Structure formats: structure tokens, C-alpha cells
Amino acid sequence: MGKKLNGRDLIKLGFPKDNSINIALGQIYRYRKGEKKEVVLAEAKEVLVTPEKFTNHRTWGKLAEGLLNQVEVKMHQLLNCGVPFSVFGENEIDEQAKRQLYDALKLPVAVQGALMPDAHCGYGLPIGGVLATDDAVIPYGVGVDIGCRMSLSVFNLSASYMNGKNDMLKKILLEHTKFGKNGVHKIKADHAIFSRDEFREIPFVKSLLDKAYKQLGTSGGGNHFVELGIVDILEDIPGNKLEKGSYLGVLSHSGSRGLGSSIAKHYTYLATKQCPLPKNVQHLAWLGMSGHDGQEYWRAMNLAGDYAKACHDNIHARIAKALGEQVVLNIENHHNFAWKELVNGMECIVHRKGATPAGEGQLGIIPGSMTAPGYIVMGKGNLDSLQSASHGAGRLFSRTKCKTRFTHSDIRKTLKDNDVTLIGGGVDEAPMAYKDINTVMGLQEELVSVLGTFTPKIVRMEK
DNA sequence: ATGTCC
Image (cartoon, rainbow, N blue to C red; front, side, top):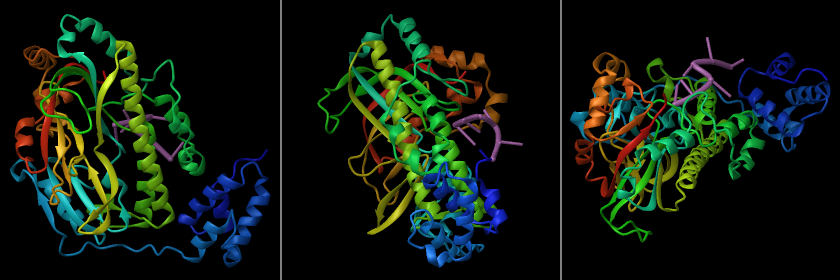
């Protein structure tokens, strides 16, 4: 057995160093696995020389078309005038985050933008930024943690169930949640997501299957958490018969782990190669929705989003089993994702990077902090916000500032004052690092209405 | 955010 066929073999044949290598490898891995390398390479050479003969071929059609319609790689310039936008909570948002949105609005593919009241600076699009584009998807407009999301499950138990059970509930979180780099469950769970076609049809995604399997039901690091606490249902929840009152609930915040991270990095790399932009906006490189990589990213992004949901579902199932209780209500939403939505009657790609979808009647969760309530919200379908809202309170102090400003004993005091138990968590995640959630909610009254709250009592984060 | 660089 010779060495596996790779991109270098194709370059040796004379393939142009562009996306055609990516297409060729994809098709070879998909349809010609296990065949002799020399045979496959001889065919590839023929396609390179006479692509017009192969346009309808099962293996080589896609490559032949790519070779015949070479994508012209040219530097895009920003337009002088940006497309329309709205900013919610202008006084709470730093200038750099606004600048990032203004630059994004000048992309030739931009249609409309919005900034949420928890916005702050990020790579490419600001976090808390929403951008609608025409027939283009920006991997960094979704962000590194594709499908990062919230999930709240309510148990058929009164909140008073927690009284005197702090140690038992703490133990449940310790045993049934896993965080960070080495945090995997001893007993793995299977899931329908692993039989998805994307894991077989997209060679790059295929290489991530093993990692995805190992990390199912784990939570990651940074601001990710799993919390047990009090759910206060203040209004009727559409589609659910739960009565107003106080219940035990679990709230989780995490994303698509290594799977989404690798997908984001891979397609951002491809986007920056084929969509060069001025240096200050190079992270906003897009992929055309009808192109090979754009279509592949779209499928991979949706897979990562569904995987993130599968992780939350698995975490909640483990906790429900440990409690021996049934979930009677679950509310969830992505806040790092892109959707196909109508904007002024035109189908657009709406990127929400740290923004909660808030279409009319759409339910979502906006977390506060460890020591401040999160909100169960219902969208108002505000068109100026591109039907979005904030994804949290937003940071008041950067991670680096937290390290000089707060000590562990400051945090312990704040937690004690609020009767919150914390497992893990660093000074950079101090509750004092976040803005006042009530101020932020006040700035988006036109975007969402409040149906209930979640008050954390036992919090687990990465150690 | 991330086996925190292929």
C-alpha cells in the first residue's frame, strides 16, 4: 500500500493551487477510496488536460466544472457608503465594536445590519452583531463556536425541592457534566447525528467524526456553564401548559466543541484565500452560496449547529436521569449561527454572532450572570434589529482586566451574598465582569418581551 | 471559542 493520495500529488500533476485541489480531493476520497493511487492520478491528469470531456462524470464532473470556470481571485474593496443599520443601546457599546459593524456594512455583499446592546469587539463581525448578506456566507460572521447556544429545561419539581439538597445537587453537576480540554464522559452516548450524511460526504467533516463522538454531551471552557437554579414562569408559555410558578431547572450554555471549531477554522481559511479583502476587514471574507465551498460550509455549519443541540440534549438527559425526573418544558436557541431569512422581501443570509433570534413569537433564553437572573424571552419580530436581541448582559471588563481587578475572595463574597455555589470558574468569569442584565433588558424592550426568569443556584464552569 | 499551530 502506497501513501495516501494528497494535495501535493495533484500539484505535481500541474493542478492550479486554488480550490480545484480541494474539490478533487473531496471527490476522490468520496468515490475512489481504496483504489490504486496511480490509476486515480492518471485519470485526474486527463481531467486536468481535457476537463470539457468530464463535465457529467460522477467522480470528476464537479472538478471539471471547477477547472472550466476558474474563480477569479480578486481583491474586493469596501464601498464608500454602508447599508442601513440600527444600534440598540448606543451608549453601552464601545466605539470599536461600532466601527467593526460600520466596516462590515460596506462589504459589497452587505444588505442590512444591527448591533445589540451587549455588543463588544470580536474578530470580523463584532459579538452582538447581526449582518444580512446577499448570496454569501461569512464564516467569521458566525464565529468560531458555531451553534453556541442556550438550553433551559424545567423539571416537574417546585423550586423548594432544592432546599437542603445543595450537596446532592452539587454532586449531580460534578458527576454528570464535563468541561474543558480533557473533559469527556466515561460512558459515551450514541446519537442519530453520527449517522448524518455530512460525516460521510464531506471529507474534511469526516475526519472530525471521532472527536465529535468523544465530545458529545461535554461543555467546553471560557464562559460555558451548566447551572441548576430556580425557573420563575411569569407568563403563559406558548405551546406549553406549565402553570405560572417557581420550578427547578437546568440552564446550559455551550457550543459545538472541537467539531465546530475545526469547521470554522477550515472554511475561514478557504474564504480568506478566495476572497481577499483589505487587511482591516480580512476576517469578513465570504463564500458564495452557490459555490462549492459555500455550499459545503452551509452543510457543515448546520451539522455543527445540530451537534451543539445534541450536546445540550445529552447534558440535560444525564441530569434528568440523575434526578429521576421528567423535563416538562425546554426552551433553546442558537446565538452564533446564520439563517436564510427574508429581509425586505429578499432572501438573505442573516448572520447572528452573539445575538438571539427574536422573530415574532419565537422563544429564547438571554442569560444574566452567575449572580443575576437570565430571561425567558419571546421575540417581537422587530425588523430594525433583523429580528434579533442580545445574547446576554455583555462584558464590562475584559478577561485581562479581570485578572488585575478581581480576586477569588472578591468572587467568593459576591457568590455568598447571592447564595450561589460555584464549581470551577476563573477570575475572568467573575460575575462582576458583566454588565447589569436589567439595564441591557431595558435597552431591548422593543425587541423581546419577558415570560420568565432563571436564577442560578449551583453553577459549574471549567476549572 | 479551540486536543488554544498543520
